Length: 166
Image (cartoon, rainbow, N blue to C red):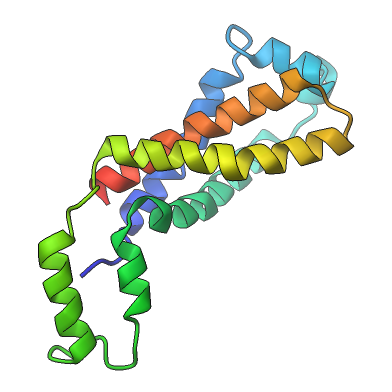
């Protein structure tokens, strides 16, 4: 039966931290992001980094949990069949799901497929959210591109890991 693999959820919640460490490094996009966002060295030094990293991880857990059904198509069937007798071994829903899963349980369960859905999530969910906020904050294209790029890459890696190994 398809149950959420919480080890993978906890693991993939680290991806935004790891990608951010690289992406926002001054040698990659860090300096450009600071200029585009209006961040200064003084503001950056005054931050509570343990709190920021801790909340980033918690929010990464939210994102991993949301990505799970996006990248694993079998979760849709699992959610439709959740009836009061689903966990009864010989119930109609349980038997149907076991048969379905034995035939189709491994379809589209590759890293590449998860990356594809992660990229779609980054573009069709992340981009609109970041762009709308940026428009109202009067941020420019560079700010949007840097931040959306970060989330597309992060969600692609997260989706790939979830789809392949969850």
